[in-house]
Amino acid sequence: MSEIVIGLSAVVVAVRKSEAVVLTVRPHDALTHETSALAGLPFGPFDPDGHRTFELGLRAFVTQQTRFELGYVEQLYTFGDKGRDAPRADVGAGAARVISVGYLALTPQAVQALGPDTVWTPMRKFFPWEDWRRGRPSLIDEVIAPPLLRWARPPERLARARLLFALDGAPWNEERVLERYELLYEAGLAPEADRDRERERGGRPAEPSQYAPGLGEPMLSDHRRILATALGRLRGKLKYRPVVFELTPPEFTLSQLQRTVEAIAGVTLHKQNFRRSLERTDLVEGLGRLHAETGGRPAELFRFRRELVRSGRAPGLALPLLREG
Image (tube, rainbow, N blue to C red; front, side, top):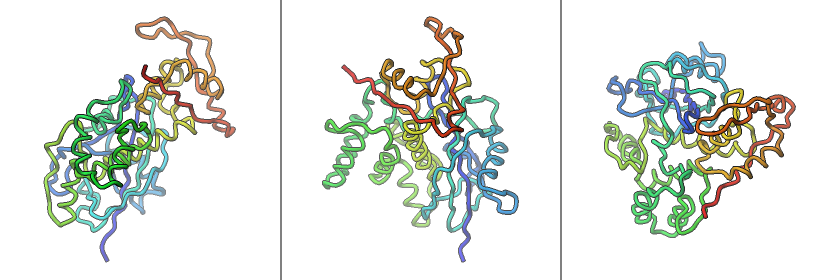
């Protein structure tokens, strides 16, 4: 019977200087034992004898590998496609199948004291087409659309391309991060696609070293797919659960809160409408103290009414977009 290895992957997200960042590592490659040329997510093996639960195992190896202690954690998805490889030599190198249980972790502070080859990396490096805060990214029409439309000549492909990348006047849906990445992968535009096809044929191709910047940086194994899944899930949860407050400090201004939401959602919000919708939720309360924000007049500090979570009365946030023009 072929060996099956269970690994645990962590997508650890923070917002730093109005930028969504994710904790990445460069582990030893499972085949060459050299430090990987590509970034990956913190990833470790589940030890059924030493770990009572998946989550406890995840917390233990992330702290050991990155020197970062996880706070808020939720299970994301189980990834087990045939042909996926282990990015670490001690996670089943050569095994017939590596099953990875992905977790989403949120933190209010991107701490700097990290382990070797561990850094906070901006999300836009991996998904540059996902940030619409300064308007529609020009790279969609200049870099992505031409080769994607050449590939998408069959009608069903063309409809998907237009819908997912907001072509020909279609609206942008910020939650469909995974579907956009998988379309690029299917079209052979994601750098990982050629590598993975060769591995499925039994080859040992090198990690991709050349790629168009507008198509995003590749990652180890299927970690960019896991990251896309996490970002799409997080964007969706903003609207029905108060998860954004896991990314904020205990005290914040409403401008800081809005910038945090915008960094994750990748869109610009209408300031007055955002604040009106926030007031209706009763999620925050003023502290009666002011904070001198950089470049502006002092603003009132607020806190998240975390007791609403315990009472089951904590909704998400509306995302009223700022329409250009």
